[in-house]
Length: 194
Image 1 (cartoon, rainbow, N blue to C red):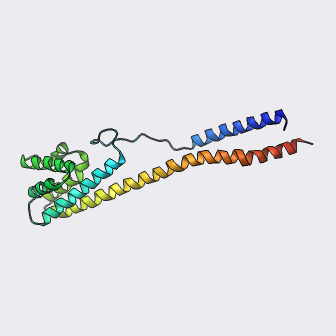
Image 2: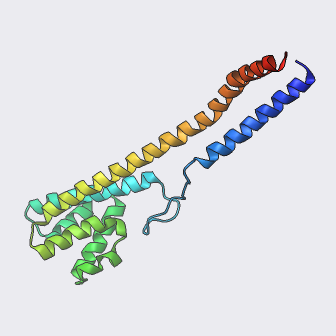
Image 3: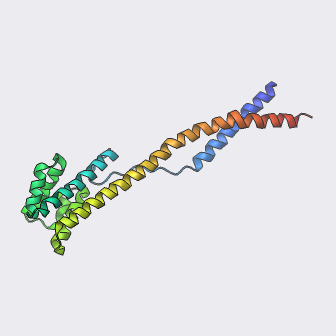
């Protein structure tokens, strides 16, 4: 190869790389920063959110189980808070204290963080609707687990894209530069020579 051909090859390769890079960057979806939940401090991970959802669902199940034994709502909340992990126990004690002080059910949002809404909503529905609270709590637990599973599925799908995209961005240019460009240059040189 002559020096002019080498220079031409280098320029074509550089131009192809720049065009390819701008083309792929234009077609990537925009990424938005994750938005923290109102009751979670900034920097919490998805694992913490999943653990909180698990705690809420388990707490709803335990309160429903205690209610099926025949005790009242306040006694069930007290019994479950006695055997729960620290975070759910603190939330149940706050809810129980609010119920003892006569705090209106609509003010539960001020007592507990927003992530405990399934529990408070189920208890409010049972109080106002006259239905057994255990059924509403079991449904709240199922809904919380389903929602957490859905969030995990979305995170898994994002992870697949995050892992595959760099591989494509690295291997596709390498394939083009090692396979396609030399063939095109060889054909171009063959056509250019009379």
